[in-house]
Length: 165
Image (cartoon, rainbow, N blue to C red; front, top):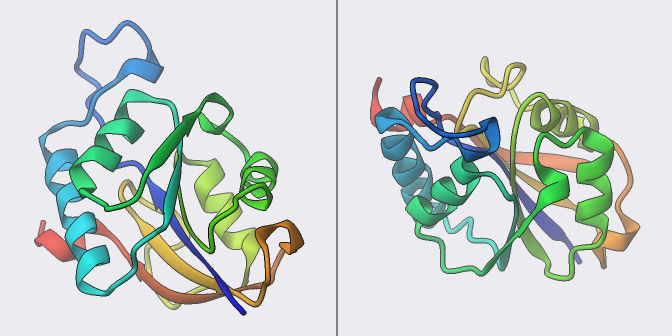
């Protein structure tokens, strides 16, 4: 039995905005295109989650909406700028076999490195740019059995390569 993780960093957000807080910052135009492209890539490769567990920020909510995934989402405050330990705990509580975690750097990059047994051979994996998405498989019956360094990278994509920056 295996469990699959889709680990996505939110798409590019706007800095020149009148949003009242960092939490409320929306996506910019490039972020909108990127989220749409990542959603299409996921569908084209049949990497579809059964559930999305996301940060509660505006930019993660918009990324989720624009990806047009056929999976329900829950938005939780503790994933907003979460570190890898928090992400690990959230994933261990997941009930579905195919989960997308949608969040922020630097936590996403640190989590991706710590959860895999080998990093994918991709030049952008180290910095995990906005919209970057990892597909990883774990030999588990349940996410409750998750251990560090146990995932196998199946695929990794960045929006810039999908939409041709």
